[in-house]
Amino acid sequence: MAPTNGLEIVPATRGKGWRVAAGERVAVVDVEGCQVVDLFAFCAADPSEHLSASHTRVTLRRMFPAVGEAFVSDRRRPILTLLEDTSPGYHDMLVAACDRRRYELLGHPGHWSCADNLAEALAALGTAMRFVPQPVNLFSHIPITPEGDLDFRPAATRPGDRIVFRAELDVLLVASSCPMDLNPISGGKPTAFGVEITDD
Figure (spheres, rainbow, N blue to C red):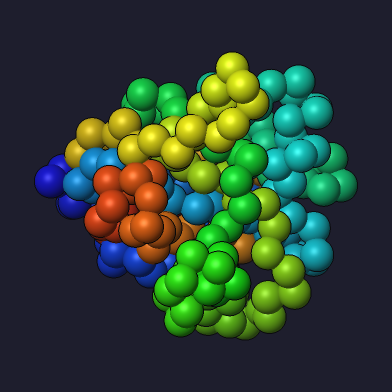
């Protein structure tokens, strides 16, 4: 397990939200390794504006931003800039957040989900969840096969791997330790992650 000094630890399968001011840095740390973290960002002034995976992909013409590039909102404004990534570099912006209906279809009704974590975290920030945007699935290793299939592989992160962002707007940021334990994306056993928010 990586050292946790200065990190706020979010327990396995749970999520948390933060108000992050423009210019602040957010580090998301995989404390034990092999854990997927779903990340969402909403404009604090108007939460109907949110980080958009699809708008980011078409703006950058890439599947995921490179260091120094920005994720954009559904109104095509920079919302988070990627500053650092010490992980192997596998992340996903194609797979929807897990939700209760997905687990019902998998035969596990009532299973906790990233959509549940998002609703809970936004409520704690005083905002109702109106919809579940496509998350940025940090550390998620889901390559596309030559046949066009999604290959759900275990996250390749090691304890202490981190990814760092700078907020370009005042945002409501939510991160979720993905509770998925029915496929190998988090090694079949979700674990905690850490968040550290600092001035730029």
